[in-house]
Length: 211
Ligand code: BEZ
Image 1 (cartoon, rainbow, N blue to C red):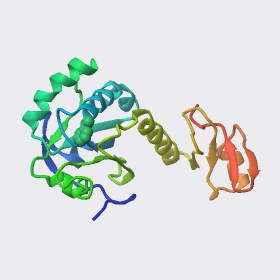
Image 2 (cartoon, helix red, strand yellow; image 1 turned 135 degrees about the vertical axis):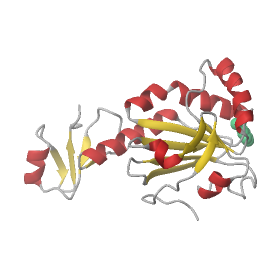
Image 3 (cartoon, protein in one colour; image 1 turned 30 degrees about the vertical axis):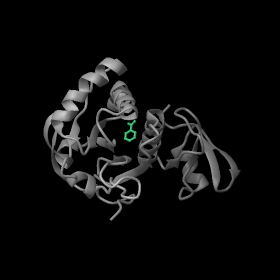
Image 4 (tube, rainbow, N blue to C red; image 1 turned 135 degrees about the horizontal axis):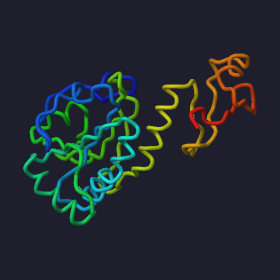
């Protein structure tokens, strides 16, 4: 069964490059990003894991933990780690799950048999501190993901979690945001003291509240 937005992220215990992890306990009060790659010692995956590791300080700033997964073993991930460091100029700095028996991959429906019946696709799950799934993404093996886009969505999710706002098309951190239609104009005047522009009654823009 596919995982849908708002579902509780399935809990699991797994062996990783940083030891045994009990997923929910490991997340604690943090946000989390669980992502799969198809296979160790493959080119696109090597660039992706290097890029996620380079961006870890950005995820840390957002109170967000990263955890990778493929159906290779922990020993294989450990051997591959030196290739990642040598070719991408960055050592792995987050755990990668060894999921040879597909246990976690099956829980998260990361194997799409019509694409490949044994390897995981490039899945991304953003999980909130409430353990609910906030975003799912699925990319094919041939396309590397965009770390900036994942950070952008995380910023949007965290803003809308804290203030009653959403973010418009192509929004970037610092741009104006949209006030929820659940808030009246009178409430908006109090809640958003920087003011707002109403292009339509349902489309009210305000400067990003936390800037
Ligand atoms: C890659 O990472 O380059 C890759 C992995 C599995 C299948 C195809 C490409």
